[in-house]
Image (cartoon, rainbow, N blue to C red; front, side, top):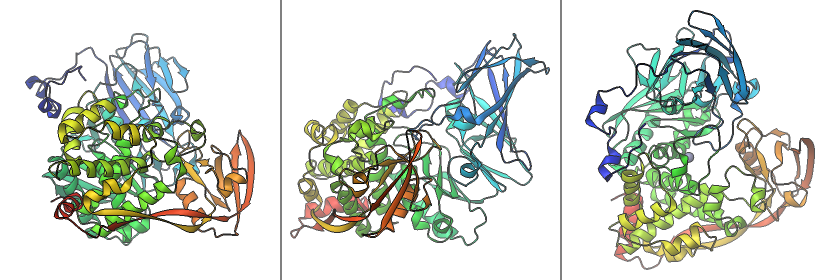
Length: 602
Ligand SMILES: [Zn+2]
């Protein structure tokens, strides 16, 4: 809210800048004041109906719906969801509204001191958006309100606090990270950024509460009618994950936290003091371990990315996409800590940690793109088709997970286990969780200051560069070595990447040398169906490809340049790289200490 120069590490941790911030409302009587009402009309699941009351509106008032949402790095064309925008004075006189871009509307207030804007945030593709998912849906028994698709902001006034009131069918409940008020249907957000970073689950759901790190945590589960539910192991798992992650940083950076689970699709998305996670009803009701990774990942984001963030990611510009070379830190290092948290919290055993890191190393070795697209390049080109990288694609999640592992091992090795990547994360939180995010230089300086070693060469080779990683040089610090093998695997290989626009079709990655690429699949093709299965997201691709055997016929329907194209090929075989971490024959005491402290946190 203010341009602040952080004077010290302590300052970055203080939520208030001066003593007076605790009791002074930093706004003038004449500033715009914004209140939203979101209504779910009984019997109408086609849209959320929004009313926006603005006192002291600027004239003209420009209203904007975001083009993208933090954490999901793709455009949403959300303007198309917004319909029937009308404006009037508080007294009911109609005011002219002009649409001035795909995502913005201008109201001529004619000098009114208070205006009311009404619109519907429509669930435009009913097939897709009535299906429960972790972002945005509305059905008979529940709905998820996605801030960036629902709330327009007053251009120039994103830092204005807002109230939001929910008018819901009788018996519906509310779960959100927003600040509760004395009115159980009204919540408060200190700014627009916080408002849209606080998704809201409405309807019927299960509701659990637990404490972690001395703070209240809530877990709500929208099972959508599924019955059996292993509540105790599920909540216990979340509590252990939360305690362990908080323990890494020493304190929770929020007053309360809400885990929102939906039996459906979508994976997870991190928010300031909440997360929304879509996993199958089967996982939620019978196999909670299946939600452990995504829960740990999203929860670790509470620090890494929601607070420790690349400089470019904030303050958010919702009209234009932003780029950073550091998504490998925000997502990939979060994936490394996912494994660390699951091991240290005993949700997973040490053998699980070793197996899962082995798989990650194997997947990396199996992808020729590791020698073409650096982690920084993969981060930077997140908005682009892999065509910009000559159709080579590798995930900055995977690259960053492995870089996190390497950095942790190298820091522990060079400091005789006195320091670790944990010290770097804490340092980053102390210095870059405030007004200003971090740059690559800041990151290297943080490692040097918090842990000692200089990683200049490491960066040049493995972060900015694509040098093959000499695994054993790093792994030996914890008494591991890696053996690479290859095995015959089915070549029906098709990778996929997220849509260019949210809600759009997932795009194909034609892996160089694969049978699909030889048959004419082109990177960037929009996937419609593979062997009869509709492709709604990457999970469908993985699952259908997994069932194909050598010699099997594969039919892929895609859209290319607006035209339907069908690609047919026979699945072949290829040599798939695998990796296994094994124990070095001579385990020095130092190796044992390093490994134990890495996976057990002691
Ligand atoms: Zn993530």
